[in-house]
Length: 145
Image 1 (cartoon, helix red, strand yellow):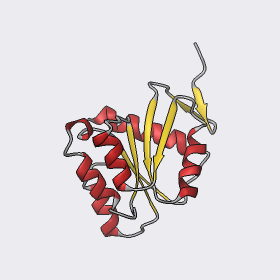
Image 2: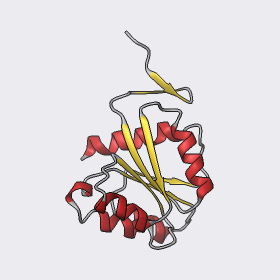
Image 3: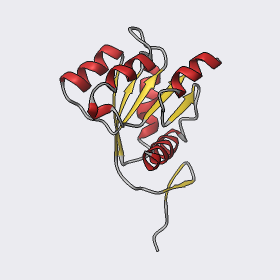
């Protein structure tokens, strides 16, 4: 029997590869997320800096990631607003979404939770466990939907 794949010392079932679209206006945060996901060789990530860029990529250029990672605050719209717009397209209606946020507060959390995300990660997060956290959230969400 083979040993389980490990990320940051935690066993992970490698059920599939994931293509991730990460939307965040902070270039440093995009770089941290890109570098952190390199720990899982079955993840590829593409990052954009605004909701408009994400909409163009997804709706106009027909990019179809497996997971969306959205910052709560974007320069041109909120992450929840972006998700509501994307979910109007059937291709994005049942896609796991992970929100990244530094927005503390019940109202912001409730706004995200009502959209049925795979998870909410608070900034700052541990970059060494980010890849496993993404995989666990997406796998759990997919199993439930």
